[in-house]
Image: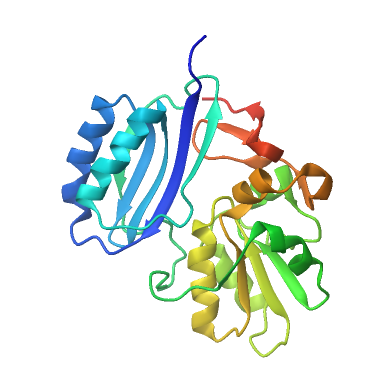
Length: 244
C-alpha cells in the first residue's frame, strides 16, 4: 500500500531583501525532492501550499531555513491518498496577497483567537464576524452568522470596509479566512484605521476544522482549498475533488 501524500501549508511575513534571487534555488530543491505545489515569494515574505513525501517536505523546510529567517505561525500538514498538484512552481510577486493599500502585518496585526475560543467569540452580541474570502468560497461554506462582503477579489475589502464598518462603533470585529494569511493583512489594515478590537481566527478555517469536533462546530458547508486540491470538511477530510 502506497504512503499517503503530505500536504503542507505555511506562510510567514518576513522581509526578503531579494525575493527574485531565491526563486531558482528553491525551485531546484523542490524538483530534486519531487515536491509539487506552489511557493510564493515577495518582499514581505513567503506563502506555500505544497505536497510530497513527508521526509521530502522535511528536507525542503530545512533547506528553506538556510535561505530565509522565518517563523511559521500557521504551519499545517494534512494527508491525501494521491498527489493533489500537477506542477511545481515558485512565484515571485510584489505582495503575497494584495489588499491594494499599505499594510504591515510583520509589525502589527489583530488579536489571535484560538479555534477552541472561536465559538464563544462569534456568538457574542457585540461581535461582527466577517468572512474575508470571496463570494464563491463563502457560498461553499461559512461560519454561522458570518457576514458575506460578496467580494470577487481581496482588494474589494477596502471599499466594503469604508461602506459597512464604523471605526467609532463599539462593535468588536472578528474575521476569518482559509489559513490565516488574508486575515493577517486585513486585520493589520483595520488596526491602522483605528479599530480598537480586531480579532482573527488563528490558523484560519483549516485549524478550526482540524481541531473542533463536528458536533460542536458552527461551521456550515465545506472549505475551498486553493490550487488543484479539494474542498474539505471537518477533520480536513476531502469533500470533493476540483477539476485540474
